[in-house]
Image 1 (cartoon, rainbow, N blue to C red):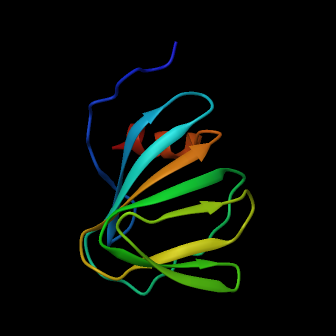
Image 2 (image 1 turned 30 degrees about the vertical axis):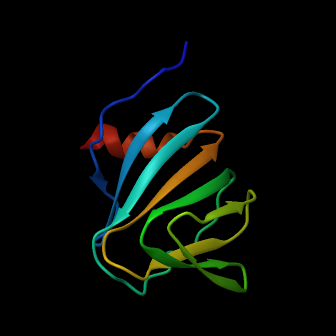
Image 3 (image 1 turned 60 degrees about the vertical axis):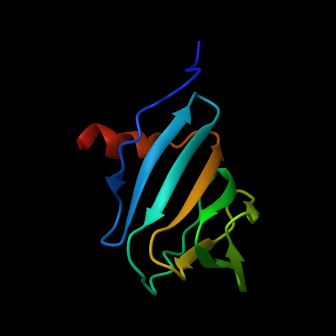
Length: 115
């Protein structure tokens, strides 16, 4: 059986300017929080096999998807299909995202285990 509630809120650094905390997960689904502690112009463009739903919890961001860009603020949501190149930059310090992935991201667990 999967977790019903995961209460640990430990953030792990993922770059010089951002950190991630796993909210809850099972074999099929993972929810994570991503916080940007400082501004950066590094878009961190990437792609992955996972479908991703992103909710802006706090602050604002400029998101890039393939050749498109859009500014979003707290309360906005985005959807990224698998294998679509995307990335973002925070427009405010302490901006935060809540990401949901399916299937779950095994490599995120590796970061937690190494810290």
